[in-house]
Length: 85
Image 1 (cartoon, one colour):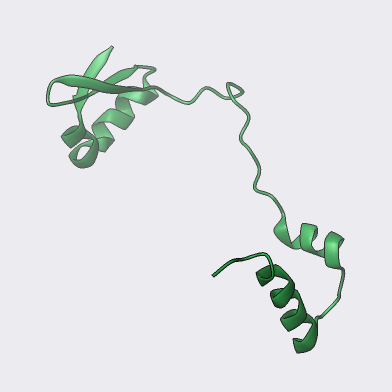
Image 2 (tube, rainbow, N blue to C red):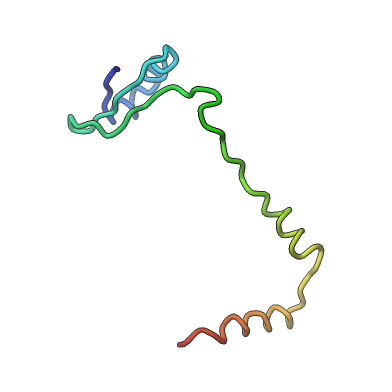
């Protein structure tokens, strides 16, 4: 396992990236103490989480509904009723 400093991450990342491409693991140190290990990505090692589709979720909940100002104000008042000042 090769060793690099936090400064190397900032200033010489291309060198570290080459090490990773060769399959090396890199111990990252700060002030002489290990803070982490950097290793190459292995395809299939961990599934990437997809981002939620908020627009689709909103459409499922509310459809094409557009609230009037009176409805919005009413909802705000209902939310604030339980809040103590």
